[in-house]
Length: 433
Ligand code: URA
Image (cartoon, rainbow, N blue to C red; front, top):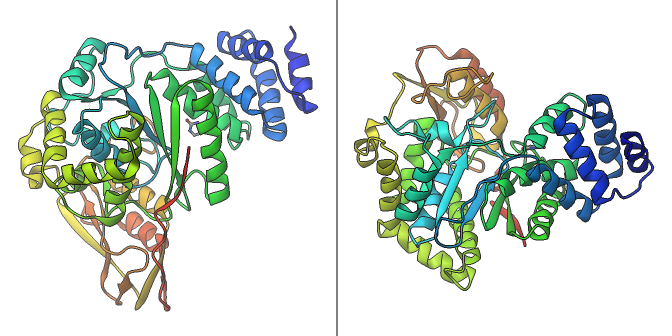
């Protein structure tokens, strides 16, 4: 087979066979196919698209390019969740314990943050002593004993995706639905769960800015999952503003813990219950969504979900005193208010700008070797639709320095105030099964 013929076939709108896709993925991963031919093919895919069968084959080939995690020693139906990335997204810390509290095993492999979105592992490490590195045996034992463990990704999962993503990043071919969907799903599938709930974000702070694009991505990923034998559901949720009120590492752990203790932060609690309900139905613990929702809501109220969170911290050697008394979590020395310049209603909060403002404070990494500070972050005092008076605080910056001008500037750019009343955005747009 010649790579030249594969490129020309796709360029002219043809459907690639399983053999042709596998030839490309294997050849590229092993270095037999050069970057220039791989980029020609990804550009052809960008323009011509892929059928659902081609996308599933591409995804499976990327899974097969590396190791896969074998979770078969974990008892029960393993359900994973994945968010396409947002600012203030601490849903994993709520959903994990919540789902575990009704007996569904959650074996979560996560990554670190880069750029304007934070990473699950960085956030968890706000708790002193907490370890995210463990042997595979320990990971499995923790899930079997406590129904929940969160670890750093081990093993060489989907190396073909790693190489292809880096190439797409510099050749203008990231924004291709089959390529994005295949990329995300190859890593999820390699992580070994039986079922998957995807939280596909939509809006100004999301990878996909329009509902139409988010729906198309969600549908593509659901098709891949279902085609490759994993029950997959996607929830399309709003990212036109940060989720909840806290952004930053310790800040987000604190807010998640408060929800687990029954606090009612509307959007965050609602989205967590939505995702957890789908996960537990997929795991066949409940027969329908309503039943699941009710039982999970109860576990937020009766302390069971929080107990499961505390167990996670304890089993991974984190300091539980910080969870019992959330004021012990790291906190930066200075609290700087950013205030409204006019009366009105909050019309927009650009989530990406808030994420960047938090990164400037030290909550995130501009490059992958940057050190992060767990105690810095942003507390939102106003969200879209809220009334505000000139001089009132929009946010509080938790900063190491007494001066945080670049973050202040970024927050000011993020907030738009309207003189007329503004409706709160919808939180959940659609569920795709
Ligand atoms: N995230 C991924 O993992 N892959 C993509 O292609 C885009 C976003």
